[in-house]
Image (cartoon, rainbow, N blue to C red; front, side, top):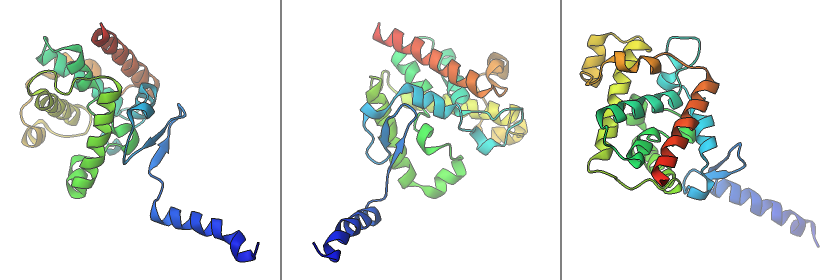
Length: 216
């Protein structure tokens, strides 16, 4: 075997690396999740809870000793959704809880930055969300307009977070998010930052309760 022959495998490896950069992330559960073509089999709720509890909303620009996590925000949105739709099915409530699940791997980009990035980000987010729904057997749209109702609850949550945590005045928040349909008094337990371990634990507990109700 010549020297050139011995070097050829290394050359092929370098070419593959240049042509197809790594698009997967290794999770603490041991799973490897392909961000561009995510498989439901590589999604674990413990990874989602762990990741979301460590991703800060509002780019970390919130008051308090701890960052305000996406896990806590997700619990807030599900609480608003359940308050606004008391007859919602467990599957719909689970969809509300997991509405930001892709952010456990792609992070939480503020809305102005998402608008700049555009379709590329939305495509990755949509594929991850679809894989999450398949993994946990969430019905495609349990009730008509579920996605729009979750989005409305997300906007209500954003209003209250903006005023209570992110330094917005009520006037400014109303201009951006509109007038909230549910007052802060009903949500006060969710509007101060929790320690990371509490956010992760509470998210998992709520998921387990909703999943058990869905399976029943």
